[in-house]
Amino acid sequence: MAERKSRILIVDDASLVRLYYRQILEAVGFEVEEALNGLEALERLLINPPDMLIVDVNMTQMDGVTFLSTLRRQPLPLSSIPALVISTEAGTQDIAAARAAGANFYLVKPLSRDVLAQYAAMFCGLPA
Amino acid sequence: MPLIRNTSDNLASGGPNPAAALTSVSPDERWAAARAAADIPTSIPALAQALAQETEPRVREAIFTALARIATLESALAVLPYLRSTDASIRIGALDALRAMPEAAKPLLPQALADADADVRLLACDLVRNMHDADTPRWLCALLETELEANVCAAAVEVLNEIGDARALPTLWRCAARFPDDPFLAFAIKAAADRLRSHLPGSSG
Amino acid sequence: MVFPEARRHFVERRVADRMAATGATSFARYFVRLSGDLDGEIEKFINAFTVNETYFYREDYQLACLTSDLLGERLRVKPFGEALRIWSVPCSTGEEPYSIAIWLLENWPQVDAHNVEIVGSDIDTNVLEAARAGIFGERALMRLTPKLIDKYFVATEPGRWQILDDLRQSVRFTAVNIVERSETHPHGLFDVIFCRNVLIYFDDSSRRVAAENLYENLAPGGYICLGHTESMSRISPLFEVCRFVNAIIYRKPLEAMHG
Image 1 (cartoon, rainbow over the protein chains, first blue to last red):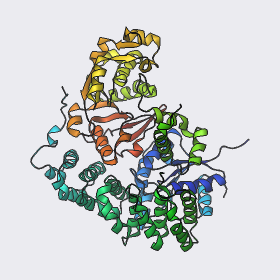
Image 2: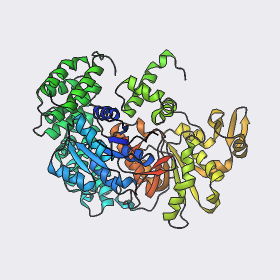
Image 3: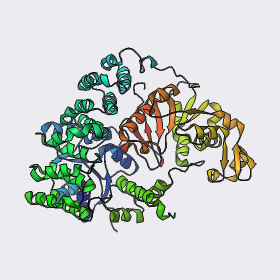
Image 4: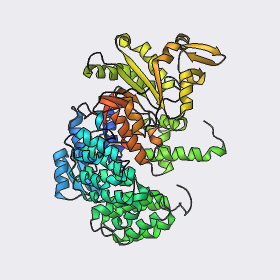
């Protein structure tokens, strides 16, 4: 019996970044959904909570840090969805802010295919 | 006839000096003052000052909206420095405000695209997108020829992918050659080149 | 749907809009989404072409949400006896506010226990005049059962029906430009605002101002409903997102400062 595929919601306003992640993650067996900012992500996860989130920081209307703070104030189980922040921002303040807002981990762009696939597997509780 | 509701209404767009209320202790009054200031171009200095101190996100949003509504070079200049903020929500607030006043922001873009701070250059690329000007793709190509930060290049490629045409191809390939080890940039440039190769100058979309 | 060659630009724009809305970087990619009906794309695609049509009980899942959830929530927090105020803006020729009225009468058991005020507003005074007259054709009534039409309308001539006087009197129609605060503000605070399929047509800065105006016209905890294919994610960060059964509705925070 096939197991349900783990589902990842990519939150990033760059279409090419979403495409890049989608191709990598689908190739290793994940189901992928996309949102172009924190607000759209909230809407999607209210309807269909994913198994993990990949979150950018700089996005229109609602940035990634604000999104995470808002997410962590939702009722369970939404508030505990694992979130991996992948951002161009490498400053310690940005990383600290994201952690404080509820990021489970923080990676700086650019990301290689292998690293992305590995982290996704880890966050979804799958073997690497 | 309109229904007048008894709210804290006295603070509406009246009063001799709405700008003074921008520093009121009450967030309601600051909100109302910011909204009223959208019609008063001379309030830019007061709005800029208020922006520097405002801690309430929704009031800050209203101040940004007011500056975007005024839409002059001066109001765009008041917003621009906030692209450097260490607070993501302020950065994005500034970006969205500049995005909402493309004509006013346009003269500031060339210098933003050449800013010493890579983060500012990166955000500035996004603003080029809705300039609706046939020349602006060239600004991104010029950036791509000399940009040293891969993430800034990626931001430029993302926008060129949407507004560029086949003339950008040589620049894209040269950029790819300068960053042979960046997996995402290689992917993005190839995707953009595939799309743009069939977009001849002057065609729509 | 079939479009003549003369409508090519209209069609291209709608396709481009859907591609942009779904982040599709190529038509091929969008076509995959459309033919697979990913995320209900077929309905969104159709809506994009018919967005200007108005008729009774359009997007009635939101009317259902009104009576099953929104009004109940509002009653929990409102001072006892205060009227429930609902705003339909833009109201066009009146189908939306009259739909709200009929829906409440038909589907809300508590309708007689509360004062409900419905306001319909539009920038176009011609449609307001038509709305006040309350005369509709077959197409506008196509989602209503014959029983409902019989109950709430009177046939005036073949193919035209007028809504009952009682209902015409129960909706107040006003002219308003939602980008002008001086026009929106005097309308006071509402419990629920229906603002469907208009914000997307504004430029960025007008859209922000309109969203702020509507925010001001909501009571703390009040709700705003957008069109089925619209999202605040492209409009404004001011509102909270709420999920009810099959509906995403936006809300002014309960602890918000007064507009």
